[in-house]
Image 1 (cartoon, helix red, strand yellow):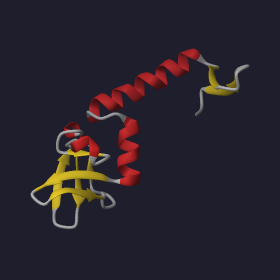
Image 2 (cartoon, one colour; image 1 turned 30 degrees about the vertical axis):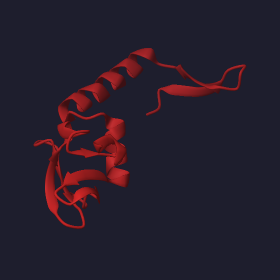
Image 3 (cartoon, rainbow, N blue to C red; image 1 turned 120 degrees about the horizontal axis):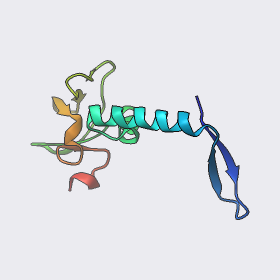
Length: 106
């Protein structure tokens, strides 16, 4: 359920007006709790699911995808396939052993 209304200010910039402050605070709190449980920002998580990412391997930095159904939310980990390997990664290791871009791992 959307709790904000998109409007434009006099400069033409998009602004969001909160229609129901209490419900917005509750929703934000729930999202933050989910991020704390995962150990990962939900925006990064969404991009990870959609695009995959990059991982450091003995072969260098490789692109990976997450095969369908290979996420363990209780264990806070996921399984990936690269050209050379099948690996288990932890959400909390974002930016260390895996990332959304090659540049983040260099």
